[in-house]
Length: 314
Image (cartoon, rainbow, N blue to C red; front, top):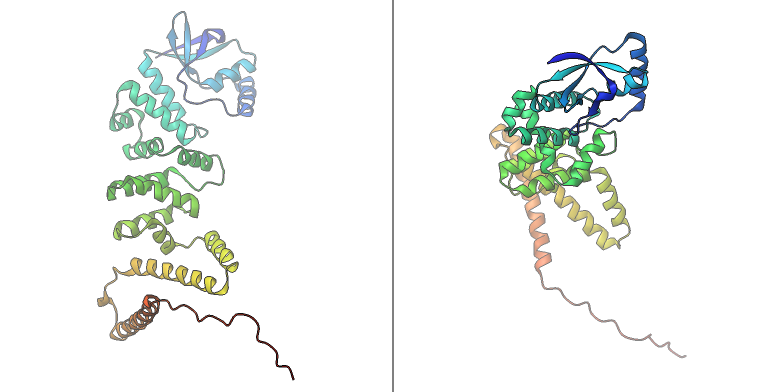
């Protein structure tokens, strides 16, 4: 690298710059600082024909121009590969680069330099696992990408790259790509935290016949959904309302039983064991009676006499 002072007019923006300018206020503040104390950090450029192309320091360049400067200190890089690496390394430290922009910038760098994830992580000074998590956003549907960006920008979405990593890990473990989509859908529908998402994924791994929905209900029933179900049930006739409540209770009980079936009876005292056996016998008897009633042939109700009964004439 070579430190020089360059006229602003000779510096052009790099076409592969990863970040755009998001805040004019930050430029105004930096411009005022330049007028007070000068520019503390040079911009980084590379030679481009008879001029120079900006690699890093776009905000500093704009602020210097706004402060009325005609020249700026600059570090001149030796080659295009160095330029892209420096530009990317600087941009990855910016707080306003959202997860999707960051992943796209890293992916472009890897493709241009023909680097593996491990090699790119070494060049950028980032742990390989972190870089892998960053790139996960490129492998999910666009709606999930938008959800992650919305969360980053302070929106209502609960989804982060940690949710993506958990979902993709579950899909890989279970050899079922569709599980990632199902889990991410649940994150949005049930507003799951990262801890709850991990708990759901753990239950599905431990009980392979357990659906994502049942696992979510075992971890934490969704208040809004329960409220909607109860509101809808309230509009039903009494017999249908009771049936809806019974089905919901059975779903929750089945999910709880799946979640706890791995517990060993050797941890129970003799009294606890007897109590548990008695409870299961009661449930078994009740379900047996219910099954017997449900499997009986349905009898048609006796027809009522048509017409009205005539009054006796006295």
